[in-house]
Length: 576
Image 1 (spheres, rainbow, N blue to C red):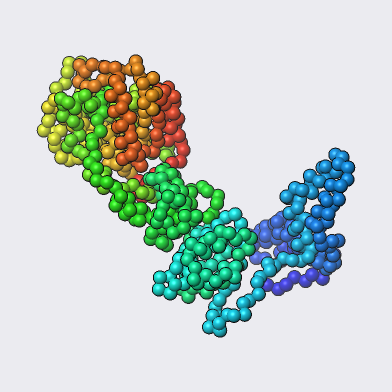
Image 2 (image 1 turned 30 degrees about the vertical axis):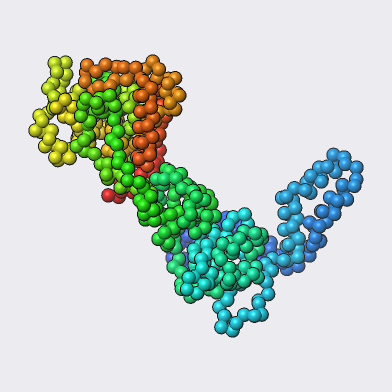
């Protein structure tokens, strides 16, 4: 593009010349569309502003302005010292306070730097003792702030050389673009490192402040540029790098809690991934154990403890879905439910580490997500469910269970139960049509998958309470379940708040409600601990039922947010 003449710039101004260009070019433009484009482009206000700034700078440069002084910061220090010896009236105190402020000192320091034209960093002289063969040596200087440099090193087992093992995404080393994985480190601040262990070199770096000078032999290998990760995972366990003996550099580790959402920045290392907390403004990544590595070591640590089936009693409320669980008292005389469909071995072998997730927000035409409630016997789960149903019968619904027992006179088919034959029930079991089922007094009872679909098809939120080991079988694209764990408070609070409450220990209609015993409280606490320990990674929300009204309000708020807010769900639910 030909350069514009600046001969008349002092008269008309470059920006004025630019504004006049479309008119001058109009006879040479074929279409109105091209002319409009020219007007928009040359009439852009930001472009005019830039040209004005350019002209001002060009003018002052031609004037060769000279700074009045080169040492404003030193002069300010002298003035402050002089004022200290004067009578301290209000004006002097105000001036001293002003001169002592860090931002004023920084401004004066920058003024002196500009006045002295001292813009470039002072690099150390090139060493004289470099071998002729080492023509590829690099001298790199990085300024260390409070953050780590963002690189880890290792000793090459064959050559003994100190090698850059990884560059942390978003860290100081990564942003500089000067250090690469595979580079050989020779010196740090003039100290040779060939005979030092990585731990000793890290100590040298930790003690260094300000600018740090590295002497490096660049890697021959070309490093493949890595794009910032778009993979997000949900952590299913707590992690503290300071307690991890295997991590190559504790300072580079990233701590997280169960349920945290992490953004994976790099998976170049099969053992140690680089990640950061989702939404964290700090671009620097940290090390976390990879999924494969964490699964492998957790599986080795995990003891072979047989999982005891968790029991729960039935809470009866007329007209509402009843849970098929037997209490500790029932199991003395009655057969435990769900013996036909347990997944204890599968659960024990399943090691929770990470789950790839993606944002999801329910759209107007989408079915509601299935809400699964889990909790130990006596915790008040069914009371909370009943309060939800009463609060809005048009919005919330429950499943109708199947049974093979005979219908009683006051019952209606499809209301209290769906009554079917034993043969048909067993056929449905073989066809995997039940979420949970069991046998009681020679009769089958169960919750079918179709009964859940029936509630959702009515455009209602389906409230389902199940045994915790069943939850993982419901985690599908169709149901997108949101799992809420109703947790008991401390045993002291249970004694205080449940002393006048009663528990129904049998699912039979003639079962009597009995007061809670100390044994019931201990069983409740123990069951809750087992549930949370073994299945806590599947829970989306934990609500402590200390006070029924408070717990209900928290549950209601959770439901409202579930329908409007964006939540993280497994990728498989949206990309099956």
